[in-house]
Length: 322
Image (cartoon, rainbow, N blue to C red; front, top):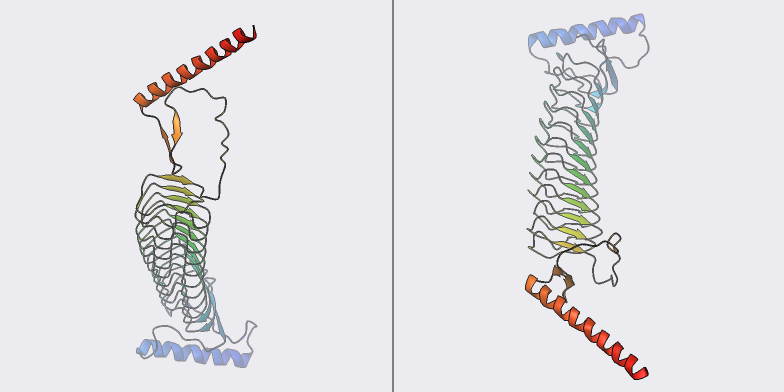
């Protein structure tokens, strides 16, 4: 590939062409003699472009032997290891500096995606975003150190300062908000929206946390929390649902809705719907349950006796009034 380094994008003068020819000859001789750098170094402020629609501006641009297409670089040491990778965009010092064959990556920010080698379809925006990614594909990181430790994890989305920053191999997680899913390493299919949502989760899977500090201390799986601080007391339990409720440490398979602030409950679709089954009762802690079968029979008999007693009282009143 023949690149064209130039101080401007306009056509050079005859003297300029002579100087460019001399420079190109010197570079070719240095490379052939083995005394030149492995990557062609352009002067600070220079512009590189070639027939394969690659373009760059800055220092240490691309690689002297790369064959990729449609790459764009801006900054120092951008895509200096590139060999056949194509359609990459790198803006910022050391952005995509180790990328060799990866395609369709976008890195914006100092040291964004610097160690990516073969990973594809990644987007990193922010200082140290996707810092450690090497072969992971289809990740999106927006924010300082977002997905910073991800290496081979795929399909993750992290938006916010240090969101999913500890993730290494976890896949298909979504973290939106500062430090959301901050400690996640290998957990997969989690959704965390809000500051420090699912903050302590490391290996738990399929959790959904919406709201600030939701499920912030849990390491369990398949928990759902909705509302600020919802489920924040849950630790290792799984299969819990916490809606506007802090939850309880260690419990599993529990639904908690509301807190002491609620004093009335209205649920549509119950009134007027006849069902057979056991009566529902509420204990002093607010837990719902059903009356045991034997107790249900007793309760039914007691209700019948009470009804008959009311009828007897009404008949007596009529006789007296008679």
